Length: 326
Length: 295
Image (cartoon, rainbow over all chains, first blue to last red; front, side, top):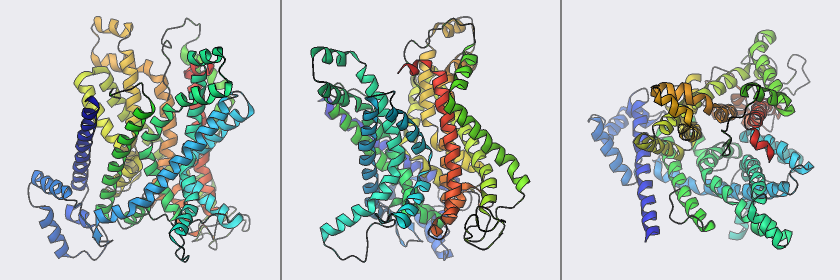
């Protein structure tokens, strides 16, 4: 069956890309100025000669480069990407333990951006020269131009001093002793500001895209046909036009996953959201290179998975492509 | 993105040159002019402000956390160590704008080179270059740039290079698409028939015709690069000896409850810079792709 072959092909390709990311990490450590052992140890202080000697031995740093690479890849296959001397933990455990909050943040931001962005764009497309449409064009430019970490700080000021509706830091309130459901509600409450901050840029982009896409679809022949047939305007608009206009937005949403991860690093640092971003911030402060490189690896992995998922979602949403390579 | 609809390549006989006509269209666009004026003002202040104001942005000039409008010596107040916010505003633009511009140049240079080669030569070259592009698209650009700056020395050059290396992919795709389309046109074939070299065909014959969408995307990339530089400085990855708007926000992040002003003003400066570039980019898009305006 061709679909099975396609899936296998995609997965095989994903593995090649993952290996390439590992090779990139390996090259970067060797290219960095200074002794690779010291780079691997990081600048966390308290690094003794014994530790450096142990690193040299474990990584085979006296061996020729290709053997070093082989050792590195061998360790990686066994789930060992190194040890963080600052956090005192294997980096894989460290990164995996922080992935949950980041994924939650990114998914929440994506849902917010998709709903609000599409709704605004569709609303604007009903009257493309109208007041609301022009307002949206200006608003999206503003949303697109404001740095997310700054918007976040501004929201913190607003919600801490002016209207204390939402908590401005952390994942949940540690002082609250509530049940499972209460904790989930508390997390959702804490999620509002960071997720919205992260979503702003995408709300701006998706609203523009939805507007343009709707206008294009509404001008097409099959919409004219539907109208000529006497299909109710509401049905034409929502059922015929919206369904098709939404396809480019799905594509672009999938492509944005990497950007969302980048944005999450900044937004998490602002809101003390305990995910990969705060981990990145802390390890950058300590020049903990092993952790930073593991972060690069895992974020690439997450992008690859997100790309595969989007690809299959798109196939489900659009029956016109079946087994075609995009 | 700035794809030109099919049929846009048909030459139209006009008395004016296309560039001149585009410029005239651009000047009629009020928001684009607003962007241009705004950007010019920001550049002028950054260039001539520091010598005119004459205050070192790192110097302590008043009590810490002085609110704006209290001490006439520091009109925009001071940060948590008593440094003059206004001096930072005036002096902090240089690093941001210089890195933003050179990073954008870097991005466009890498993207154009890869895209032009892939689109022009096609075949195996295209396949290899596009695989490399796809590989880089998997790496989240800010995280890759972070790694590069952290591993190598955090100088302004390194930051610009890191941003370029992390974000050239979309330019490469755009350039490739343009070259793929243009290389099949008759005037390119004619050039090849009379014996023009590949180098001449790529840079002299095709490139000028591929420029309009690339110019628009390059403008928008300047905005992205400014945001990028600000983000890296915010994370403490900038050059610590050079004041920048991102650095100001990053260092006052923890004190946001004590002094709202020390993060608000530099952020507004970043916002206005990016906004001005976006307005210009939108204006160029309308001017260079007249077909799009029919929508």
